[in-house]
Image (tube, rainbow, N blue to C red; front, top):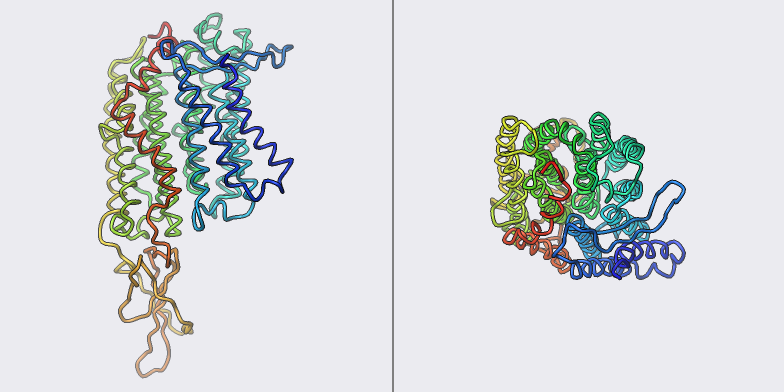
Length: 575
């Protein structure tokens, strides 16, 4: 009787996208509330899913819908939910709704809507939601692949149309990497189909690789795992991610980090490990090695970044490394940690990208030295939220970011199956070092952005005399930081909203000539009227993420009680 709920989750955004195509003029005046209402209905359906879920048997497939799709090929439209997919479906619906809440702010909020093509933006987000939710609902291999691929096109356009200055390069790199990974993954799925004779994920999970030789399982696991690793992303297949995050609009970064990366890791838990257990066991030491390299590499890369969004992007590589390490242990503890970290990363990093977008909107830059520090003094609520999200992401006990990484490292202490314990102990030590480096780069970021005294102009700017240049005698408006004008000594200084150059004009004594000294302004200055702390729509968009980060940090059993029974069932003989 409840099989209609998964259909509603897919049908509502699909119907909304179709209506935007057939009645664009009628909907144009109400585009902001239109997207908000549709995503709100989808979120409400996901909450019905949560409320009606039978928590006494989380390992069983519930809300199941199984209809013929392509009967001649044995393909079926098979949907369902268990304790692994339920949190991710709800997370997807929540983040999509919060993105529309963020876009529905007043003047000066969410430049994505102020730009051209607002109808196309709503359409793109709705199609993206279909693909994301469908991936977590699908119980047929090729249906999973179809939903997995649907998200690529809307995300490509989201980056390519509404992104930053480097959006074209970033969007092309994103689509090329992910499409190549998808081709390899498709070959692995077809190999499984040819060997097992079925596309049904439930049947394949129950058989645990029966009918497939060890060599076939290894080959299929490598192919499927490579495709999933690109989306995760795993080092060294990660190079598309920093550019995509840096150039994507705020809502694109939130959904990319909060949901799209989880589609790759979800594939390991739903398909690769339970369907190909011998292949997983053979590849686990390599998977663990790539995971811990990613953890350390991501942390070191973060320490070298100037751009706030780019730093958060590299932090995702490190956090996803902990997720992959948990999967590589092939233990209930490690896999549970990976699934917990999946959800925690979606909440915390989604919040971080919201905050980074708000900071960039106010200062017109995300360059940390240019922000000038002192965010807690200038915008105390925004600075406090950034501090909270940073300490949650670095894994402070009592917040959601702690449990997943701790359980992944604990799983490496005693790996499953015939995995070499000494090797995984090494991985545990390296992962622990990565956790320390994670704390280091977040604390460095906070010291550069939130702490210190606000500065309008950085001292020690590089002044380069340019003899013979004609001075610019146009009047220059003084820079403004908050409500106080910033003054320079010995020269008039002018700075645009996003930094820019400071021009000092001085007369040479006796020569009558002019020398123009140009100082590159490294500190962003808030334009008049931009010193607004957290806005009402931002409070509405960010508060649920803060509350859930606290809730899962203080009560991790909420998630672990959901995932433990299905994880034990999926691991089968390996557990």
